[in-house]
Length: 119
Length: 116
Figure: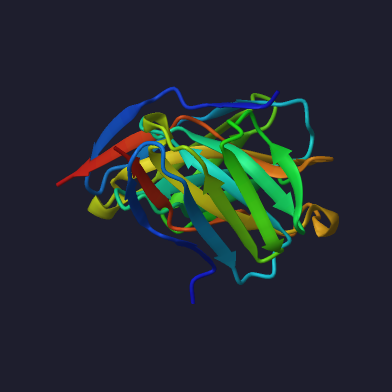
């Protein structure tokens, strides 16, 4: 029973193509995220959504467009792929901030990552 | 802005020995969580241990324990009786809650190698 699942796990594509990565969580969480791990393994948040509403939008090229059809899904679409987009992209989810309480053991759960290689 | 610093890019230890990974952070918040995540070569992000800032008692999970020094903003991870399976990259991470919601801020990681 995978809590946060993302597809595809591996994706090799050519420069200039458009691709999507899908993410689904079955934890009942209201908040979902996309993180990017670059070649130096540095993890940085890209976006977060709370119940389908965009909350965090870090400095990311507008070629990247997240879409949340419902609170259990957060997809990432990338237009006009560039070599520098090659990375591992992680989807994650956590409890809604409105029900967040200190001491509740809130944790961010990660998917297994999607390895994107742009050639 | 919150930052997380891991000053040891790489560490190595022999099986059965104890190793400590360092982490410091900077924040003006009073309530927050601190985490250590393990990332093996498969790149899966595995939660190792969590500490709530309001708790003075250090968290422990089997062979893993932390030394949380709130005033010093230090959060080190101790791995006892190291095993070959502990070989991985370890990330220290900080999470707080503000109007924008919650998000993890990661350090740059420490690569731990356990040898026999």
